[in-house]
Image 1 (cartoon, helix red, strand yellow):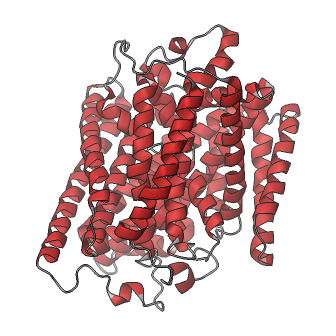
Image 2: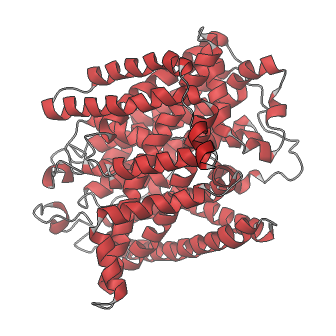
Image 3: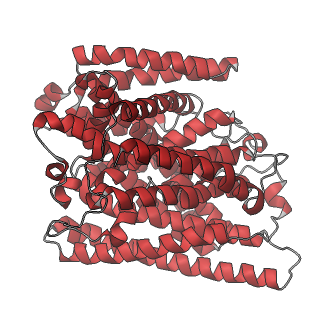
Length: 600
């Protein structure tokens, strides 16, 4: 099959989804109101609540949610063949991710930009809030560990990419100062910065940055040093005002994403590459996992992702200038991530063959078994993009640095956002514990300290995933990815449950939310059970004594949360049938009071 046909077909379906389906969601399901005063205006503080142009918010949201996950998941999932991976990415993006991301922003904006965990308490029940916050804590911990390990691996394998990545930081701070202080458009400064970043690629090749000497001096490996650097960096950057680094870097990375997709698309068209992988792999190697349900949790962010609801309700909703911007930011970001996932599929089935032909390898040699499929998937994407870049005359060595820079930049942005979100989550959990603990007791004092102390809560947000990332072998990027994917998709299903209950309470038809909700809850519950059996039967002590209990806890929380959601849905439908006067309308205090700051 020609890669061009697949790419153009997917893009055409995405365009139709935005033109028609997102319009239906905006008008009939979420009923966006251009006159509604968003929390960015009501609680403007110059740090988290900042009314922002929709293009910049789109850049922040898109790059924060994109990260490395829509690259890594599809790069592993093509093991079963490119056909099932492509179908799930396209349909999941249009009907699940679009409704999920869009809806999470819309509901959060209507509830003072509260996070999805707090929204579960407002919309479903107080117990649901606690359950959801615990699931979110586990999810974000795994996100941070996995992304840090991916960045570390690329730094070690491609030291030529380190300099361009580091240069992005001061350039982004400069763009932030220009845009925020002078109130100028971000497009030109971000484009100039991007040119400066790419000008550093040859310099990076001339002066590759490694930490081997320091690692040797300390008696540790290079990966450990990079992990310390990465988590120290995120500890500080996640506490900065969003306009200072997060937003401008996201806008630079958006331009980088556009350029990367352009290189991939033009490379596919010029090279007329053929997909070398089977449409559906019938001769799976012995010991391969079943495509059901694992395909739907392996491709996490490439089709739908619960992490998106954390970004949507945690940072994006606090920056939305107009409620109607939610369609552009939420749904279009989903399509952008779906496009990246399609490109990952093509890079690992067509582009990588351009790179591997010189080594005398074919596709089945690369994906010889499931272990090989899960080993260094980001590296295979990088090689595939380098293959497409070679079609347009970019030298292979420069193409590798370019593709590594893209992946590292996206993963670093997601990591920064995720640590910030984890701090919010820890503080929310601390508030709940403080309010329920015995007054004056040690637990109440500790919870009060965490609830108000940003430094302490951020320290926990970085130390826990740092410990997971230090587990030797392929634990974080391999074994932990399975549980991350399942928890991530489960969170998406539970976020959809919150959205569905809210839509039902508003007296509108929730079917567009209920269908992906039911599908995700079934698939993720099935996957949690399959993985639990695998962890318990493993000879690996980490899987038996760490992941198995964690899997069981997450499954228990998910079942409880699902029961709470079903009860809330039944009540909402009963109220509609009974013609209750409220008909699910928001209380005046939720929509019209702007004097109470509720940011916890």
